Length: 359
Image 1: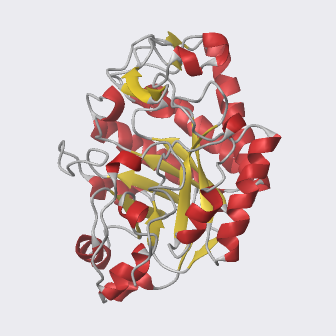
Image 2 (image 1 turned 180 degrees about the vertical axis):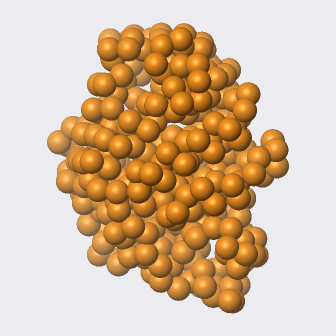
């Protein structure tokens, strides 16, 4: 097997890809009025359509699910129409694109919530984290604990968002179960101190994540559904006392649902891969479908892991920002351009659609 197997076609569930390179979801805070994808979004994603699969930026399933300024939604007709412009542009370039479905839970601020209410979470524990509001980073607001009677509504919002994504032309959806957001908050005991059926045991804390995934599969099909997990990341102030036991169980249960893939952040999101002891190979072995590996991969490491059978596809995030032609650069050995951190969040075309392809 050679490194060029990264660049050969592959199939994920019902989605046929041109290569095994995935563009990871990247929050860019450029939504327009009504949380509709901004005027440059279609160009931005179409420029990167040579990735085997694009995972569009995390997109809130409801206003309650929003945690940052100017992030897009997928719960109104206007948002669906705005995303249709994006998916049409990607498909015109021969690409495949799926949408990551997001509820941030406690990683929010009262100024973003309906009627200025408190963000929601499994328990009323404020995250030691920042969010982006009023063009700057501020402390998250103290959340309120969701009532048991509210949880079916969360599941229903994810289900409806999945249906809306398919209506908007996406090839599939990814449930966001990572990075200290709502489903991850329920799963990890650092954020979940509930004593009802959604707290306490590993099985109870996994319940909401599994119910959401099952509902999404029921709505759009297992072959068009994936999920993102981050067992050991400390992102957004999240923690777990026993992530191995917890995620061995979660992945085994996800396997029973038959979804297309699991997308695993190996280590600290955007940081070290060895942030905590964890056997990621155990998750790979427990899941009989596609395993997408993510976190500080380069061509060499991805090739080694692919040849060793440790993963099927590899997700790259920030390298895609400054390198719309990342796949060609990797294939040809072309040096990568560096991104401008000052233009990561918010703004217009600068630092978004003006990074050139290699000459």
